[in-house]
Length: 400
Image (tube, rainbow, N blue to C red; front, top):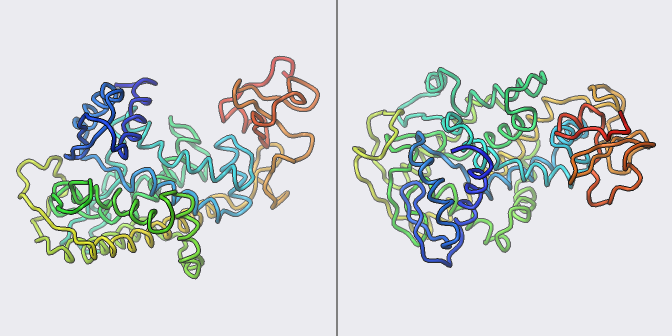
């Protein structure tokens, strides 16, 4: 199932996650959900792909990844801002970058996974509860897990040597994976597919432990802060953990995975008195796995909310640190990196700017095309022609 129709269906599937009105039942990760009848056909198609794909892992849900993106965007240096803006084809002011990073943070789940199921294992690392720190590299020996992919895409972006997903796709993956690796159950396994095989009893609509940590605790956190909005939650978490901002610098991905694994051991498996099973990191199905059910009390969920908030803040600060380290010099007017200006490029930059039309995907510069006639809401400023082309825009005919 490939192409635009599949992608739109996948988006419909996610939008249905929190739709409580409707009469049809949908399955995601062994769980029954409700959706409207108008979404049934699309969701059925997505379900088939999900059920046939290996060990699905959807860390933090939409909102968690968006929270991480907002925090990271707010802590980028001007140099990193210019590169992110160039890659995503948006003005290099902070607000435009926040919106772009928020949007792209979920693309690896909503689009790329549907286009290539081989990306599914990239979102997690199965570290057994019996493992020691020195065992972590062996759990990703082929570098086909979240730690390996964080390293790969960091190197690709730094060297500007992109794979078939292109610069925007590679950056979207990196933003997403840094969020993934901070979800404790994306770095732990007790022969239960990271908690996917553990049934929960609670007031939560989620019916397995992994889904509770992906979605329930984040939504609870959001509603405890505001009315369930990722941006507001991100701002509050930044304030709450402001003293840790300078301490939460990027560290090796293996160290972060081990840190998340330790949280899973102490605050999930031990706290819920889940017995340690023989190490089986390659379990692809819950069939044949010992049946386990845990009860999640209100006090446990309150504690989980706090842990999730702390992890999301760490992920945002560390993502900013990682991107700031990748790009230490800003993009110049000719599209190269250079120490010309530390100020981010804004929509009010000088007259040699290249401006694209969001609707037509055509760009122009002063004296040609529709440069002077473009509606403000459709204008996208690029630092160079290469940046415009990289974002999928083409030059106006009378500009060539």
